[in-house]
Length: 594
Image 1 (cartoon, rainbow, N blue to C red):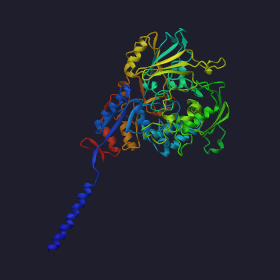
Image 2: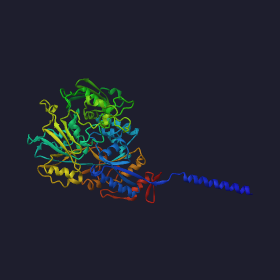
Image 3: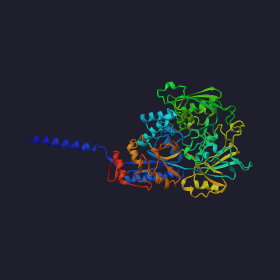
Image 4: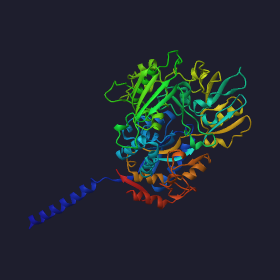
Protein backbone atom coordinates (compact mmCIF):
# COMPACT_ATOMS: atom_id res chain seq x y z
CA UNK A 1 0.00 0.00 0.00
CA UNK A 2 2.82 2.37 0.93
CA UNK A 3 4.71 1.52 -2.23
CA UNK A 4 1.64 2.22 -4.32
CA UNK A 5 1.14 5.59 -2.70
CA UNK A 6 4.77 6.51 -3.18
CA UNK A 7 4.63 5.58 -6.81
CA UNK A 8 1.53 7.69 -7.31
CA UNK A 9 3.22 10.63 -5.63
CA UNK A 10 6.26 10.21 -7.84
CA UNK A 11 4.15 10.28 -11.01
CA UNK A 12 2.22 13.34 -9.85
CA UNK A 13 5.41 15.15 -8.88
CA UNK A 14 7.13 14.42 -12.17
CA UNK A 15 4.12 15.82 -14.00
CA UNK A 16 4.35 19.04 -11.99
CA UNK A 17 8.07 19.29 -12.72
CA UNK A 18 7.43 18.96 -16.45
CA UNK A 19 4.86 21.74 -16.20
CA UNK A 20 7.30 23.91 -14.26
CA UNK A 21 10.11 23.28 -16.74
CA UNK A 22 7.76 23.94 -19.65
CA UNK A 23 6.58 27.21 -18.12
CA UNK A 24 10.09 28.40 -17.19
CA UNK A 25 11.60 27.58 -20.58
CA UNK A 26 9.03 29.51 -22.57
CA UNK A 27 10.14 32.89 -23.91
CA UNK A 28 8.70 35.88 -22.10
CA UNK A 29 6.69 38.61 -23.77
CA UNK A 30 8.05 42.13 -23.37
CA UNK A 31 7.08 45.50 -24.80
CA UNK A 32 8.56 46.12 -28.22
CA UNK A 33 11.23 48.83 -28.24
CA UNK A 34 12.69 50.38 -31.39
CA UNK A 35 15.14 53.18 -32.18
CA UNK A 36 14.67 55.91 -34.80
CA UNK A 37 17.97 57.21 -36.15
CA UNK A 38 17.85 60.89 -37.05
CA UNK A 39 20.13 63.88 -37.41
CA UNK A 40 20.04 66.64 -34.77
CA UNK A 41 18.27 69.94 -35.48
CA UNK A 42 21.29 71.57 -37.11
CA UNK A 43 21.47 68.61 -39.50
CA UNK A 44 17.82 68.20 -40.49
CA UNK A 45 15.18 70.17 -38.61
CA UNK A 46 12.27 68.63 -40.54
CA UNK A 47 13.40 65.04 -40.04
CA UNK A 48 13.35 65.49 -36.27
CA UNK A 49 9.79 66.82 -36.37
CA UNK A 50 8.63 63.86 -38.49
CA UNK A 51 10.41 61.43 -36.16
CA UNK A 52 8.87 63.08 -33.10
CA UNK A 53 5.35 62.69 -34.52
CA UNK A 54 6.06 59.08 -35.40
CA UNK A 55 7.37 58.45 -31.88
CA UNK A 56 4.19 59.92 -30.41
CA UNK A 57 2.01 57.64 -32.51
CA UNK A 58 4.14 54.57 -31.84
CA UNK A 59 3.82 55.27 -28.13
CA UNK A 60 0.07 55.69 -28.46
CA UNK A 61 -0.32 52.19 -29.92
CA UNK A 62 1.96 50.70 -27.26
CA UNK A 63 5.41 50.58 -28.88
CA UNK A 64 8.34 52.06 -26.97
CA UNK A 65 10.50 54.16 -29.29
CA UNK A 66 13.38 56.57 -28.84
CA UNK A 67 15.67 58.78 -30.91
CA UNK A 68 19.24 57.93 -31.83
CA UNK A 69 20.70 61.35 -32.62
CA UNK A 70 23.65 61.23 -34.99
CA UNK A 71 25.70 63.98 -36.61
CA UNK A 72 25.41 64.17 -40.39
CA UNK A 73 28.51 62.03 -40.92
CA UNK A 74 27.51 59.54 -38.19
CA UNK A 75 23.97 59.33 -39.58
CA UNK A 76 25.17 58.33 -43.03
CA UNK A 77 27.83 56.01 -41.61
CA UNK A 78 25.32 54.17 -39.39
CA UNK A 79 22.59 53.89 -42.00
CA UNK A 80 24.45 53.62 -45.31
CA UNK A 81 27.73 51.97 -44.36
CA UNK A 82 27.36 49.93 -41.16
CA UNK A 83 23.59 49.31 -41.44
CA UNK A 84 23.35 49.89 -37.70
CA UNK A 85 19.77 51.11 -37.30
CA UNK A 86 16.21 49.95 -36.72
CA UNK A 87 14.64 52.66 -38.84
CA UNK A 88 15.59 56.19 -39.86
CA UNK A 89 13.99 59.41 -41.03
CA UNK A 90 15.87 61.47 -43.59
CA UNK A 91 16.18 62.58 -47.20
CA UNK A 92 16.70 60.05 -49.97
CA UNK A 93 18.35 61.51 -53.12
CA UNK A 94 15.87 59.78 -55.41
CA UNK A 95 16.41 59.97 -59.16
CA UNK A 96 14.92 61.36 -62.33
CA UNK A 97 14.82 57.89 -63.89
CA UNK A 98 12.99 54.99 -62.18
CA UNK A 99 16.11 52.89 -62.48
CA UNK A 100 17.41 54.49 -59.26
CA UNK A 101 15.18 51.88 -57.56
CA UNK A 102 17.53 49.20 -58.89
CA UNK A 103 20.31 50.69 -56.80
CA UNK A 104 18.00 51.25 -53.84
CA UNK A 105 16.55 47.73 -53.63
CA UNK A 106 18.45 45.09 -55.60
CA UNK A 107 19.31 42.06 -53.45
CA UNK A 108 23.01 41.78 -54.23
CA UNK A 109 23.55 45.32 -52.91
CA UNK A 110 22.12 44.54 -49.45
CA UNK A 111 25.57 44.24 -47.85
CA UNK A 112 27.21 47.06 -49.79
CA UNK A 113 27.66 50.66 -48.66
CA UNK A 114 25.83 53.79 -49.75
CA UNK A 115 22.31 54.23 -51.09
CA UNK A 116 22.79 50.76 -52.56
CA UNK A 117 19.97 48.94 -50.76
CA UNK A 118 20.60 50.27 -47.24
CA UNK A 119 17.27 48.68 -46.24
CA UNK A 120 18.63 45.15 -46.72
CA UNK A 121 15.89 43.96 -49.09
CA UNK A 122 16.61 40.49 -50.49
CA UNK A 123 13.78 39.23 -52.66
CA UNK A 124 14.24 37.43 -56.00
CA UNK A 125 10.74 38.51 -57.04
CA UNK A 126 11.71 42.17 -56.79
CA UNK A 127 15.04 41.51 -58.51
CA UNK A 128 13.17 40.13 -61.50
CA UNK A 129 10.92 43.19 -61.62
CA UNK A 130 13.87 45.57 -61.39
CA UNK A 131 15.74 43.77 -64.14
CA UNK A 132 12.65 43.78 -66.35
CA UNK A 133 12.20 47.57 -66.07
CA UNK A 134 15.92 48.06 -66.67
CA UNK A 135 15.91 46.09 -69.91
CA UNK A 136 12.44 46.99 -71.20
CA UNK A 137 12.06 49.07 -74.31
CA UNK A 138 10.27 52.39 -74.07
CA UNK A 139 6.90 50.89 -74.99
CA UNK A 140 7.04 48.21 -72.28
CA UNK A 141 8.87 50.11 -69.58
CA UNK A 142 5.89 51.94 -68.10
CA UNK A 143 4.18 48.63 -67.36
CA UNK A 144 7.39 47.30 -65.85
CA UNK A 145 7.68 50.32 -63.57
CA UNK A 146 4.06 49.87 -62.44
CA UNK A 147 4.89 46.31 -61.42
CA UNK A 148 7.74 47.61 -59.23
CA UNK A 149 5.41 50.16 -57.62
CA UNK A 150 2.81 47.46 -56.93
CA UNK A 151 5.48 45.49 -55.10
CA UNK A 152 6.55 48.51 -53.04
CA UNK A 153 2.95 49.29 -52.13
CA UNK A 154 2.68 45.92 -50.40
CA UNK A 155 6.18 45.43 -49.04
CA UNK A 156 6.92 49.01 -47.88
CA UNK A 157 10.70 48.59 -47.33
CA UNK A 158 10.66 52.35 -46.96
CA UNK A 159 7.86 54.87 -46.73
CA UNK A 160 8.01 57.85 -49.13
CA UNK A 161 6.64 60.75 -47.07
CA UNK A 162 6.92 63.94 -49.10
CA UNK A 163 8.99 65.80 -51.62
CA UNK A 164 10.04 69.08 -50.04
CA UNK A 165 10.37 72.15 -52.22
CA UNK A 166 14.04 72.90 -52.91
CA UNK A 167 13.94 76.63 -52.24
CA UNK A 168 17.03 78.82 -52.69
CA UNK A 169 17.60 82.51 -52.18
CA UNK A 170 19.68 84.61 -54.58
CA UNK A 171 20.50 88.21 -55.37
CA UNK A 172 20.56 89.90 -58.77
CA UNK A 173 22.60 93.03 -58.02
CA UNK A 174 26.10 91.57 -58.48
CA UNK A 175 25.21 88.65 -60.79
CA UNK A 176 22.23 88.07 -63.03
CA UNK A 177 21.15 85.62 -65.70
CA UNK A 178 20.65 82.86 -63.15
CA UNK A 179 19.36 79.52 -64.42
CA UNK A 180 16.98 78.92 -61.52
CA UNK A 181 16.11 75.35 -62.47
CA UNK A 182 19.77 74.32 -62.19
CA UNK A 183 20.89 75.86 -58.90
CA UNK A 184 21.60 72.35 -57.56
CA UNK A 185 24.00 71.55 -60.42
CA UNK A 186 26.99 72.98 -62.28
CA UNK A 187 24.84 74.63 -64.95
CA UNK A 188 23.31 76.97 -62.37
CA UNK A 189 26.62 78.76 -61.82
CA UNK A 190 27.80 79.12 -65.40
CA UNK A 191 27.08 81.86 -67.92
CA UNK A 192 26.21 84.37 -65.16
CA UNK A 193 26.08 88.04 -66.07
CA UNK A 194 28.74 89.83 -64.01
CA UNK A 195 27.90 93.40 -63.00
CA UNK A 196 31.47 94.40 -62.04
CA UNK A 197 34.40 92.61 -63.65
CA UNK A 198 36.64 93.90 -60.86
CA UNK A 199 34.50 92.15 -58.26
CA UNK A 200 33.65 88.79 -59.80
CA UNK A 201 33.79 86.45 -56.80
CA UNK A 202 30.57 84.46 -56.46
CA UNK A 203 29.73 84.08 -52.76
CA UNK A 204 27.30 81.55 -51.36
CA UNK A 205 26.32 79.79 -48.16
CA UNK A 206 26.15 76.06 -47.53
CA UNK A 207 24.68 74.36 -44.47
CA UNK A 208 26.88 71.25 -44.57
CA UNK A 209 30.24 71.55 -42.71
CA UNK A 210 31.32 68.39 -44.53
CA UNK A 211 31.79 70.51 -47.66
CA UNK A 212 34.93 71.90 -46.05
CA UNK A 213 36.06 68.65 -44.40
CA UNK A 214 36.09 66.15 -47.23
CA UNK A 215 36.12 66.50 -51.02
CA UNK A 216 36.06 62.83 -51.95
CA UNK A 217 33.31 62.25 -54.54
CA UNK A 218 33.07 58.59 -53.46
CA UNK A 219 32.50 59.34 -49.76
CA UNK A 220 28.93 58.56 -48.76
CA UNK A 221 29.33 60.06 -45.25
CA UNK A 222 30.29 63.51 -46.52
CA UNK A 223 28.43 63.89 -49.80
CA UNK A 224 24.90 65.11 -49.21
CA UNK A 225 24.80 67.17 -52.40
CA UNK A 226 26.37 66.87 -55.85
CA UNK A 227 27.01 70.55 -56.59
CA UNK A 228 30.68 70.86 -55.63
CA UNK A 229 31.53 67.50 -57.18
CA UNK A 230 30.01 68.75 -60.45
CA UNK A 231 31.95 72.01 -60.27
CA UNK A 232 35.28 70.26 -59.65
CA UNK A 233 34.82 67.19 -61.87
CA UNK A 234 33.49 66.65 -65.36
CA UNK A 235 31.07 63.88 -66.23
CA UNK A 236 30.53 62.60 -69.75
CA UNK A 237 27.05 64.14 -69.79
CA UNK A 238 25.12 66.60 -67.66
CA UNK A 239 21.39 66.79 -66.91
CA UNK A 240 19.57 69.37 -68.99
CA UNK A 241 17.30 71.16 -66.51
CA UNK A 242 13.56 70.89 -66.92
CA UNK A 243 11.33 73.85 -67.56
CA UNK A 244 11.36 76.22 -64.59
CA UNK A 245 7.57 76.28 -64.41
CA UNK A 246 7.27 72.50 -64.10
CA UNK A 247 9.50 71.16 -61.30
CA UNK A 248 7.93 67.71 -61.52
CA UNK A 249 9.46 67.16 -64.96
CA UNK A 250 13.04 67.23 -63.72
CA UNK A 251 15.29 65.35 -66.10
CA UNK A 252 12.61 64.94 -68.79
CA UNK A 253 14.54 67.13 -71.22
CA UNK A 254 17.33 64.57 -71.32
CA UNK A 255 21.07 64.99 -71.18
CA UNK A 256 23.60 67.37 -72.70
CA UNK A 257 26.98 66.13 -73.89
CA UNK A 258 29.59 67.50 -71.50
CA UNK A 259 33.06 65.94 -71.41
CA UNK A 260 31.71 63.72 -74.18
CA UNK A 261 31.36 65.56 -77.47
CA UNK A 262 28.80 63.00 -78.62
CA UNK A 263 27.66 59.40 -78.26
CA UNK A 264 25.87 56.75 -80.29
CA UNK A 265 23.61 53.99 -79.00
CA UNK A 266 23.36 50.67 -80.82
CA UNK A 267 20.42 48.76 -79.33
CA UNK A 268 20.77 45.83 -81.69
CA UNK A 269 24.35 44.97 -80.76
CA UNK A 270 23.51 41.94 -78.63
CA UNK A 271 19.75 41.78 -78.99
CA UNK A 272 19.81 38.18 -80.25
CA UNK A 273 21.13 37.09 -76.86
CA UNK A 274 18.00 38.36 -75.12
CA UNK A 275 14.96 36.10 -75.06
CA UNK A 276 12.50 38.89 -74.18
CA UNK A 277 11.49 40.67 -77.42
CA UNK A 278 10.76 43.83 -75.43
CA UNK A 279 14.23 43.96 -73.89
CA UNK A 280 17.23 45.94 -75.03
CA UNK A 281 20.91 45.30 -74.60
CA UNK A 282 23.49 47.11 -76.62
CA UNK A 283 26.58 49.23 -76.92
CA UNK A 284 27.18 52.89 -76.29
CA UNK A 285 30.08 54.51 -78.10
CA UNK A 286 31.25 57.74 -76.51
CA UNK A 287 33.71 60.28 -77.91
CA UNK A 288 35.37 62.67 -75.44
CA UNK A 289 36.71 66.12 -76.22
CA UNK A 290 40.33 66.38 -77.29
CA UNK A 291 43.02 68.62 -75.80
CA UNK A 292 41.36 68.81 -72.41
CA UNK A 293 43.41 68.49 -69.22
CA UNK A 294 42.93 67.90 -65.52
CA UNK A 295 43.65 70.80 -63.19
CA UNK A 296 47.26 69.58 -62.72
CA UNK A 297 47.91 69.70 -66.47
CA UNK A 298 47.69 65.96 -67.21
CA UNK A 299 45.55 65.23 -70.30
CA UNK A 300 42.09 63.69 -69.95
CA UNK A 301 42.16 60.47 -71.97
CA UNK A 302 39.89 57.52 -72.67
CA UNK A 303 41.97 55.48 -70.23
CA UNK A 304 40.86 57.81 -67.41
CA UNK A 305 37.24 57.12 -68.29
CA UNK A 306 37.78 53.35 -68.34
CA UNK A 307 39.68 53.56 -65.04
CA UNK A 308 36.82 55.51 -63.42
CA UNK A 309 34.19 52.92 -64.30
CA UNK A 310 36.47 50.06 -63.27
CA UNK A 311 37.12 51.78 -59.92
CA UNK A 312 33.41 52.34 -59.29
CA UNK A 313 32.78 48.64 -59.91
CA UNK A 314 35.65 47.56 -57.64
CA UNK A 315 37.73 50.01 -55.60
CA UNK A 316 40.35 47.24 -55.19
CA UNK A 317 40.61 46.83 -59.00
CA UNK A 318 40.72 43.06 -58.69
CA UNK A 319 42.98 43.04 -55.61
CA UNK A 320 40.51 40.88 -53.67
CA UNK A 321 38.57 37.76 -54.56
CA UNK A 322 35.35 39.66 -53.88
CA UNK A 323 34.86 43.06 -55.58
CA UNK A 324 34.41 46.13 -53.37
CA UNK A 325 32.15 48.55 -55.27
CA UNK A 326 32.31 52.26 -54.54
CA UNK A 327 29.62 53.41 -52.10
CA UNK A 328 28.42 56.04 -54.57
CA UNK A 329 27.40 55.95 -58.26
CA UNK A 330 27.18 52.16 -58.35
CA UNK A 331 23.49 52.29 -59.20
CA UNK A 332 24.15 54.45 -62.23
CA UNK A 333 26.90 52.21 -63.54
CA UNK A 334 25.78 48.70 -62.59
CA UNK A 335 24.24 48.16 -66.04
CA UNK A 336 27.73 48.58 -67.54
CA UNK A 337 28.85 45.05 -68.41
CA UNK A 338 32.16 46.16 -69.91
CA UNK A 339 34.01 49.35 -70.84
CA UNK A 340 36.90 49.57 -73.26
CA UNK A 341 39.05 52.33 -74.76
CA UNK A 342 38.86 52.10 -78.56
CA UNK A 343 41.45 54.86 -78.97
CA UNK A 344 42.67 57.85 -76.96
CA UNK A 345 39.31 59.62 -77.13
CA UNK A 346 36.74 56.89 -77.84
CA UNK A 347 35.18 54.54 -75.31
CA UNK A 348 32.80 51.65 -75.91
CA UNK A 349 30.36 50.60 -73.18
CA UNK A 350 28.51 47.29 -73.25
CA UNK A 351 25.19 47.88 -71.49
CA UNK A 352 22.76 45.33 -70.08
CA UNK A 353 19.77 47.63 -70.25
CA UNK A 354 17.75 49.99 -72.39
CA UNK A 355 19.04 53.30 -73.74
CA UNK A 356 17.54 55.38 -70.90
CA UNK A 357 19.45 53.27 -68.38
CA UNK A 358 22.62 53.41 -70.46
CA UNK A 359 22.61 57.20 -70.50
CA UNK A 360 22.36 57.35 -66.69
CA UNK A 361 25.83 55.80 -66.63
CA UNK A 362 27.23 59.00 -68.18
CA UNK A 363 26.48 61.04 -65.05
CA UNK A 364 29.45 60.09 -62.87
CA UNK A 365 32.58 62.19 -62.18
CA UNK A 366 35.59 61.22 -64.29
CA UNK A 367 38.60 60.65 -62.03
CA UNK A 368 42.26 61.05 -63.06
CA UNK A 369 43.90 57.62 -63.15
CA UNK A 370 47.32 59.03 -62.19
CA UNK A 371 45.84 60.36 -58.90
CA UNK A 372 43.50 57.53 -57.89
CA UNK A 373 45.43 54.47 -59.01
CA UNK A 374 47.46 54.52 -55.77
CA UNK A 375 44.27 54.57 -53.67
CA UNK A 376 43.16 51.02 -54.35
CA UNK A 377 44.95 49.49 -51.37
CA UNK A 378 44.02 49.39 -47.71
CA UNK A 379 44.44 52.70 -45.88
CA UNK A 380 47.02 52.90 -43.12
CA UNK A 381 45.37 54.11 -39.93
CA UNK A 382 47.56 53.29 -36.90
CA UNK A 383 45.71 51.57 -34.06
CA UNK A 384 42.42 51.35 -35.96
CA UNK A 385 40.85 48.13 -37.21
CA UNK A 386 39.21 48.72 -40.57
CA UNK A 387 36.28 46.87 -42.09
CA UNK A 388 37.17 44.25 -44.68
CA UNK A 389 37.30 45.72 -48.18
CA UNK A 390 37.89 49.32 -47.05
CA UNK A 391 40.19 51.09 -49.48
CA UNK A 392 42.02 54.40 -49.50
CA UNK A 393 39.73 55.47 -52.36
CA UNK A 394 36.76 55.40 -50.01
CA UNK A 395 38.27 57.02 -46.90
CA UNK A 396 40.65 59.66 -48.30
CA UNK A 397 39.53 63.26 -47.77
CA UNK A 398 40.85 64.02 -51.28
CA UNK A 399 42.20 67.46 -50.38
CA UNK A 400 43.26 69.01 -52.68
CA UNK A 401 40.92 67.50 -55.29
CA UNK A 402 42.24 67.16 -58.85
CA UNK A 403 39.46 67.15 -61.39
CA UNK A 404 38.90 68.62 -64.83
CA UNK A 405 35.72 70.59 -64.13
CA UNK A 406 34.90 74.26 -64.73
CA UNK A 407 36.26 75.21 -61.29
CA UNK A 408 39.53 74.20 -59.63
CA UNK A 409 40.36 73.93 -55.94
CA UNK A 410 41.94 76.99 -54.32
CA UNK A 411 41.70 76.78 -50.52
CA UNK A 412 39.68 75.38 -47.64
CA UNK A 413 39.19 76.31 -43.97
CA UNK A 414 37.58 73.42 -42.08
CA UNK A 415 34.03 74.23 -40.91
CA UNK A 416 34.42 77.74 -42.30
CA UNK A 417 34.71 77.95 -46.09
CA UNK A 418 35.67 76.37 -49.41
CA UNK A 419 37.19 78.46 -52.19
CA UNK A 420 37.35 77.53 -55.86
CA UNK A 421 38.76 79.42 -58.85
CA UNK A 422 37.65 79.44 -62.47
CA UNK A 423 39.49 76.91 -64.62
CA UNK A 424 40.30 79.08 -67.61
CA UNK A 425 41.37 76.15 -69.80
CA UNK A 426 38.05 74.34 -69.48
CA UNK A 427 36.58 73.21 -72.80
CA UNK A 428 33.44 75.32 -72.24
CA UNK A 429 35.62 78.42 -72.77
CA UNK A 430 36.33 77.44 -76.37
CA UNK A 431 34.57 79.35 -79.14
CA UNK A 432 33.61 76.16 -80.96
CA UNK A 433 31.87 74.64 -77.89
CA UNK A 434 28.25 75.70 -77.44
CA UNK A 435 27.91 75.09 -73.70
CA UNK A 436 27.59 77.40 -70.68
CA UNK A 437 30.99 78.42 -69.30
CA UNK A 438 32.48 80.11 -66.26
CA UNK A 439 32.12 83.91 -66.21
CA UNK A 440 33.10 84.55 -62.58
CA UNK A 441 36.69 84.62 -61.31
CA UNK A 442 36.15 82.53 -58.21
CA UNK A 443 33.56 80.94 -55.97
CA UNK A 444 33.45 80.99 -52.18
CA UNK A 445 31.17 78.72 -50.13
CA UNK A 446 30.67 80.00 -46.59
CA UNK A 447 29.70 77.30 -44.10
CA UNK A 448 26.60 78.25 -42.14
CA UNK A 449 24.55 75.42 -40.64
CA UNK A 450 21.28 77.29 -40.08
CA UNK A 451 18.91 78.80 -42.63
CA UNK A 452 18.09 82.03 -40.69
CA UNK A 453 21.73 83.11 -40.58
CA UNK A 454 22.26 82.11 -44.22
CA UNK A 455 19.28 84.29 -45.14
CA UNK A 456 20.76 87.13 -43.10
CA UNK A 457 23.98 86.87 -45.13
CA UNK A 458 22.06 87.47 -48.34
CA UNK A 459 19.87 90.22 -46.90
CA UNK A 460 23.02 92.08 -45.81
CA UNK A 461 24.61 91.68 -49.24
CA UNK A 462 27.40 89.44 -47.89
CA UNK A 463 26.41 86.48 -50.09
CA UNK A 464 24.86 86.06 -53.52
CA UNK A 465 23.12 82.69 -53.25
CA UNK A 466 22.28 79.84 -50.90
CA UNK A 467 24.00 76.77 -52.32
CA UNK A 468 21.89 74.55 -50.02
CA UNK A 469 18.08 74.28 -49.81
CA UNK A 470 16.48 76.44 -47.12
CA UNK A 471 14.74 74.79 -44.18
CA UNK A 472 10.95 75.09 -44.22
CA UNK A 473 10.58 76.83 -40.86
CA UNK A 474 12.69 79.81 -42.02
CA UNK A 475 11.07 80.47 -45.39
CA UNK A 476 8.08 82.53 -44.23
CA UNK A 477 10.45 85.03 -42.59
CA UNK A 478 12.03 85.96 -45.92
CA UNK A 479 11.08 89.38 -47.25
CA UNK A 480 11.92 88.77 -50.88
CA UNK A 481 12.14 91.96 -52.92
CA UNK A 482 14.63 93.22 -55.47
CA UNK A 483 17.44 92.34 -55.60
CA UNK A 484 16.53 89.33 -53.38
CA UNK A 485 14.58 86.51 -55.04
CA UNK A 486 13.32 83.14 -53.76
CA UNK A 487 13.43 80.37 -56.37
CA UNK A 488 12.04 76.83 -56.48
CA UNK A 489 14.54 74.32 -57.87
CA UNK A 490 13.27 71.00 -59.31
CA UNK A 491 14.34 68.09 -57.13
CA UNK A 492 14.12 64.32 -57.06
CA UNK A 493 14.96 64.05 -53.34
CA UNK A 494 12.24 62.99 -50.92
CA UNK A 495 11.82 62.46 -47.19
CA UNK A 496 11.42 58.86 -46.18
CA UNK A 497 11.04 56.52 -43.25
CA UNK A 498 13.52 53.73 -43.98
CA UNK A 499 13.31 50.29 -42.36
CA UNK A 500 16.16 47.88 -41.71
CA UNK A 501 14.44 44.74 -42.94
CA UNK A 502 17.37 42.64 -41.72
CA UNK A 503 16.02 43.11 -38.17
CA UNK A 504 12.87 42.04 -36.41
CA UNK A 505 10.15 43.23 -36.42
CA UNK A 506 10.93 45.16 -39.62
CA UNK A 507 11.47 41.93 -41.53
CA UNK A 508 7.67 41.55 -41.40
CA UNK A 509 6.05 43.51 -44.28
CA UNK A 510 2.72 43.65 -42.43
CA UNK A 511 4.41 45.32 -39.47
CA UNK A 512 5.97 47.84 -41.87
CA UNK A 513 2.56 48.53 -43.39
CA UNK A 514 1.11 49.14 -39.93
CA UNK A 515 3.90 51.58 -39.06
CA UNK A 516 3.43 53.37 -42.40
CA UNK A 517 -0.22 53.99 -41.45
CA UNK A 518 0.94 55.99 -38.41
CA UNK A 519 2.17 58.77 -40.71
CA UNK A 520 -0.37 61.40 -41.69
CA UNK A 521 1.57 62.67 -44.67
CA UNK A 522 -0.86 65.48 -45.50
CA UNK A 523 -0.68 66.76 -41.91
CA UNK A 524 3.12 66.54 -41.85
CA UNK A 525 3.36 68.59 -45.03
CA UNK A 526 1.32 71.41 -43.51
CA UNK A 527 2.61 71.34 -39.93
CA UNK A 528 6.24 70.25 -40.27
CA UNK A 529 7.07 71.49 -43.76
CA UNK A 530 4.92 74.61 -43.49
CA UNK A 531 3.22 73.71 -46.77
CA UNK A 532 6.52 73.76 -48.71
CA UNK A 533 6.26 70.12 -49.75
CA UNK A 534 3.89 67.69 -51.42
CA UNK A 535 2.83 64.36 -49.89
CA UNK A 536 3.78 61.38 -52.05
CA UNK A 537 2.84 57.71 -52.24
CA UNK A 538 5.75 56.62 -54.48
CA UNK A 539 9.42 57.64 -54.64
CA UNK A 540 9.15 58.51 -58.33
CA UNK A 541 8.68 61.99 -59.75
CA UNK A 542 5.23 63.00 -60.97
CA UNK A 543 6.27 62.29 -64.55
CA UNK A 544 6.69 58.58 -63.70
CA UNK A 545 3.91 58.16 -61.12
CA UNK A 546 0.78 56.47 -62.55
CA UNK A 547 -2.60 57.93 -61.61
CA UNK A 548 -3.44 54.88 -59.46
CA UNK A 549 -0.46 55.68 -57.21
CA UNK A 550 -0.92 59.43 -57.04
CA UNK A 551 -1.44 60.92 -53.59
CA UNK A 552 -4.82 62.60 -53.57
CA UNK A 553 -6.48 62.99 -50.15
CA UNK A 554 -4.56 60.02 -48.76
CA UNK A 555 -1.93 57.45 -49.63
CA UNK A 556 -3.75 54.91 -51.85
CA UNK A 557 -1.68 51.99 -50.50
CA UNK A 558 -1.19 52.74 -46.80
CA UNK A 559 -3.69 55.45 -45.79
CA UNK A 560 -3.29 57.09 -42.40
CA UNK A 561 -5.02 55.20 -39.57
CA UNK A 562 -7.09 58.21 -38.61
CA UNK A 563 -8.63 61.36 -39.99
CA UNK A 564 -6.21 62.27 -42.80
CA UNK A 565 -4.97 65.83 -42.75
CA UNK A 566 -5.77 66.40 -39.07
CA UNK A 567 -2.99 64.35 -37.50
CA UNK A 568 -5.57 62.68 -35.24
CA UNK A 569 -4.85 58.96 -34.87
CA UNK A 570 -7.67 56.42 -34.58
CA UNK A 571 -6.01 54.36 -31.86
CA UNK A 572 -8.12 51.22 -32.16
CA UNK A 573 -7.88 51.22 -35.94
CA UNK A 574 -4.11 51.57 -35.70
CA UNK A 575 -3.86 48.72 -33.19
CA UNK A 576 -6.04 46.56 -35.40
CA UNK A 577 -3.46 46.86 -38.17
CA UNK A 578 -0.79 45.55 -35.81
CA UNK A 579 -3.11 42.76 -34.66
CA UNK A 580 -3.73 41.84 -38.29
CA UNK A 581 0.06 41.69 -38.68
CA UNK A 582 0.13 39.01 -35.97
CA UNK A 583 1.09 41.06 -32.92
CA UNK A 584 -0.56 41.06 -29.52
CA UNK A 585 -1.14 43.63 -26.80
CA UNK A 586 -0.79 43.28 -23.05
CA UNK A 587 -1.95 46.07 -20.75
CA UNK A 588 -1.86 48.51 -23.68
CA UNK A 589 1.67 47.51 -24.75
CA UNK A 590 2.51 45.81 -28.03
CA UNK A 591 4.55 42.83 -26.84
CA UNK A 592 6.96 40.44 -28.54
CA UNK A 593 8.86 37.33 -27.46
CA UNK A 594 12.24 37.92 -25.83
